[in-house]
Length: 341
Image (cartoon, rainbow, N blue to C red; front, top):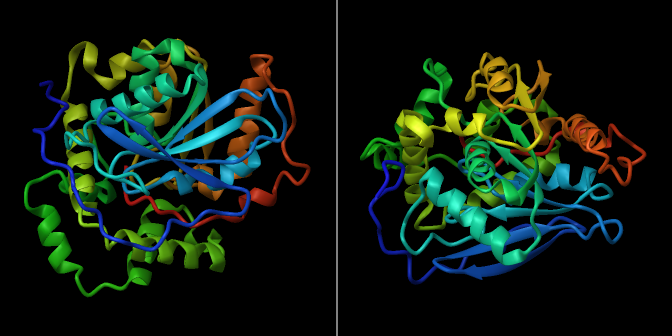
């Protein structure tokens, strides 16, 4: 067992009945059964046949819904799918209880191998950025381009505002936090997440806030919520301490795919100062910095991120269609359901 993996625990055998996951207009969900895991996949029908495939991977505490705004922006550019990692969104826990970076990367690789859609344009945020970095390094045959939004790559000096999320990795902390917050309403929890993840929480529309509260109420009914959060947080911390060829920065240097890096100047979870280091580490990289954005730039500024992605595709001669005519329409802000890196 590698140091990025955790001891196996039995999966939840009987899942409770909870309210259905929200599906925005034009989206669809499907369940994909793979060895040891079942994944829920969100997609939008492409604007036309023959568009190149893309796969979006969310961050800690998030879900495929985190990519809905960007998927809509890019529906005429790529044939996009967003996956709920095991234990998050509408995907049940993995059979082996492995929430490490390696475990999540294995789930993505299994999905891509089974779907036959690769190579894909691979996009990851935060935890998903670490996962997709590992996928791109280990399986370059599956990746056309790599887009990383505030990727959770190792930092020597972690921001103070990121410490509570890292503390989830410690034994017993999740139980203490659960007891401490037992009286918090879903609205209070969502406001806390927005304050942590957004550069300007005021960008979230009233409808987006209501949708986020609804999702928070749903996920709080899941008995494995904190196990998934805790073990995934521990997986990030373990990956931060892993050196040698398995270290994430070493793997970044091995990524062959053209890479777009997106960093927010108001990110409270991933240091803005890491942008230049990342730009140096990935061999074929270009950097987009958004001074007013927080941790989920693809939700705060989906139009801006989409245009940078299109420029990346244009460089490769793969831009088949342009963005929607109203390029700024997607930058009104949707509500985050990501609770950390």
